[in-house]
Image (tube, rainbow, N blue to C red; front, side, top):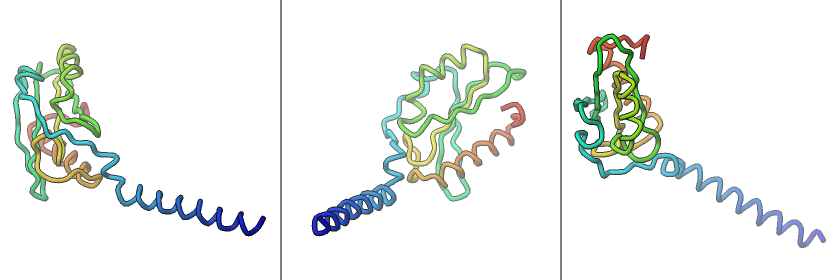
Length: 143
């Protein structure tokens, strides 16, 4: 019995550790699913303006902003781990119909943005957009 159990256990553990190592090494490709095909802002989010923003590490980002009223709060939307900002047209139209000022950006590696998606890159990109909105006079306390 020991002759069968020990090799079988070793095989199962080897497969487990190999699969775990593979998942760890390739985790970002399982998390981030960018779509490079980007529809025009006029088709997806009519009335929005495009603002190019550069991060401190030289990545070019795209921000779409649609302002409905200066006295309304802003909603900063992250488009998620897949697609890009142009794949969120339905929700953008519903948010704008509620008279919210809406800003959505596509982070590095998504849409036509330069760079490669990563967790640290997402943090950098989000801080860059927040700082840009603050510089534009958006009250971040009501974001």
